[in-house]
View (cartoon, rainbow, N blue to C red):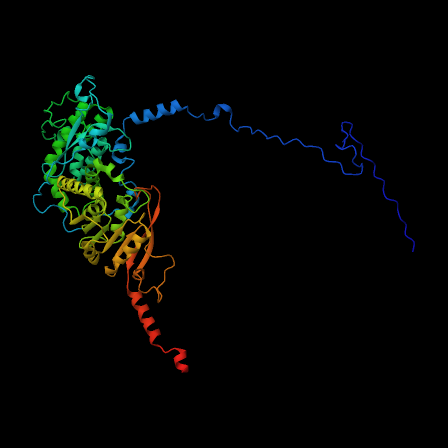
Length: 547
């Protein structure tokens, strides 16, 4: 069979472009048959992106000077009504408590008002003006009719102030009308309006709130004669040791048609000092006239102390009892078990609700600091609280805090269940052993405790009853702990642990979320394990059976 082989097709040579450059080997002695190196390539140029928006639409960053001017304008602008009522200090101790939801409900108690006339604690109470006196920055108000009025010129010996009536009998507070040196520090004017809002929202009924204009920001009355005139009030001292000064000039006729609370807001926004004092004097007259009704309201309408009230009482006591001596709490040795840190109001409130604290329950704080946890737990839930603190500065400040807290209870016409705090070592105190035996909830802020200290604390819990809950920031159980023949005698064998998360702002050293642990004393599993081990020991072994 013949096959015809066709010649391969001739491929025409590709013409060489005229602009091609001949490649010359760098080494003339190199063979012509060796592959020629590739020509050096230029690095790729980065393509410049064209902006999608025209240059005129680009957002220019403000210059540093413009930023500073803008910030100063924002700080000097008058605050709105909602801003003064809702804004709190950046370092407010109850930050984040509005996220607690159902955990902020009022806990029912049997009695929260004083049984009889309360005796005032010994000594002079610390006023708001005393807290701000060493660190005021400038004044908020002025006299628009007399810019050179010396009363509104702040100085070391002259700080404009105003007096506010409280629900308790013969209870007043002097507030300074100035700003703090640090924006994050105690602000007396904000504190004044928070107190007024707490009184109006919780101690007054709807009729009384409408009378002062609290419920309706812009009231319009069809019949001016139906509105009661404010009770007469005496001129109050502007600052301690000063004689009474007439409140002048009188307010404008247009302002007289507004309720007293609205006039107070308007004078604050206008930074009109004389009108602010005039409106506050009218509000004090209403509070004095409505005081019997307010005291009756809290006895008949409340079921316990409302959260806004116990928060305000605890905050005022802390600001006046602890605030002036706060610098003493930072004198500790770092990286030791003596480092000071506080659990804030939201954390304690969560412990109170989740652990079921209430009347008849016992709460123990091992390392109570300035005793703020004891006061809050007792006032909020009606439980009995005990605490011990090793640090002498914190234990000394706790005594001042206790005195100011009792002053606040009298001013708000409240009483608190029993609480007690002592100075000493919780590992050596005999009182702590008695407290643990009857405790329902034990709190230990062991976030920086050394391992040996945590082990010794675990031994104290052997005296606790079954069902006692131990709240800590570090777990007392070793990772992977199990009850065996070797660990059955360990104090950890009686504990069951549950891990929970705290919200942002619950601790003083961090503004983020974290984890804490709730241990429950439960000896039922331990007893079952002991019975199983005893049965295994009594069973004859195979070696004995073989013999």
